[in-house]
Image 1 (cartoon, rainbow, N blue to C red):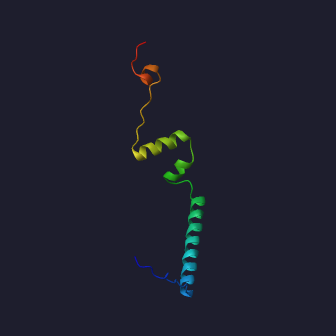
Image 2: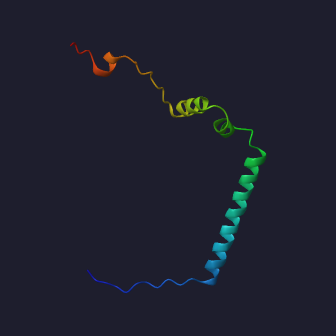
Length: 85
């Protein structure tokens, strides 16, 4: 296998300017989203999931993923089978 010299990467002024503009754009979007979450926090499914008792949140998640938990029997015969002593 042939080894070659490492490729030199040059950072140009245009690259820096593009990075700064994208970063500022993302920061403004994040601030706008946070402002919307703070002001309009009482609408939608997300607000229901954050506030309320944990059972309703758990039930909402189970419904969303299609999980239907079965209650576990609480007697010894179900844990160890039908052994006779």
